[in-house]
Image 1: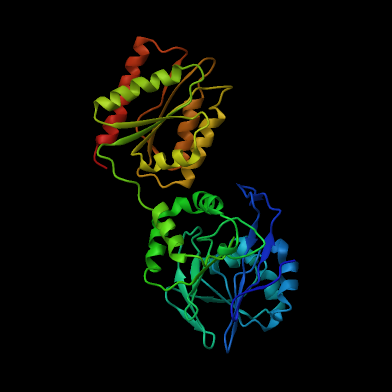
Image 2: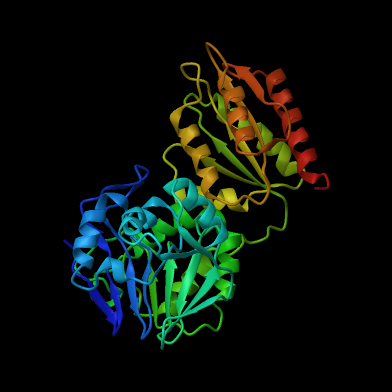
Length: 398
């Protein structure tokens, strides 16, 4: 059971805590559980619910809500984002109160209709729209792709509170809800950004710009602690993490290699030599247990991605696929790549990796190069040709 908590007079957290959770959405490890944050805002005329909780917690949610208010007496509900961990209990609320107005973005209306498969009283809002609750005003700020197309923020004007949906959240559950009453959770805060928000850096910057000069006393995200210690410092951290990568003086190539017997890395050394003679800056990283944060950073800084992979058991090895999986969580400068590698029995890996890159919307700078066992001098000459083709593609006008 989760007891409602007063944030400021007339505003309560009415969410659910899930301290036992260890993998969120069967995707992301959560070392300290999570919370599903919902908020109740009382005005003199109207009572608003901002977001709900995950559907599996609907019983607990309405049981905990009952001492605060009869759900049938709630005048409106705001859905900042329709992912089921936010909107899951909406179906039950609509059973209790079928005509309750649901305020959401245009994309959210579309998503909810397909999730609920049932008519509901939708009120689509746009930037700057407001609702007068009586002495309190809700203002809507569209923030698409933080981290779904439907996302928006809700700002409580008089109390200077931003209900920020997934932005500024963390998968972290503790006894207290407030960041100034709990141990340091900066690791969880940054881990959440890296895995959920990072792919949308440009959209983050657009959303943050809308918050410039907006007075903020509290940031109330959908997961984790309520942030009241220093809201501006939280925004500053997002500005810093979402900043565009620094410009390089020369075209920058990220060379990723996995080479159990040294042969693929020998190919890479020859390709690198060719690129550097063409004035390229080449950053080489081994795919043997790399730090994911470093790998993501370099992926975003690179103008070109080169992947050197062996073939093992008719496939590219796991570390290569793990690296490719990170591409969906970054914002590359250019979606251009090339693949090379060696094999012994068979040589499928290069083609398989090329297909995956094309599936990720990368174009191939040149046809992949595959060599068998130890490269000969003639083979290394082909590596020089491969490097020259990559350089030509990189230097050609975009």
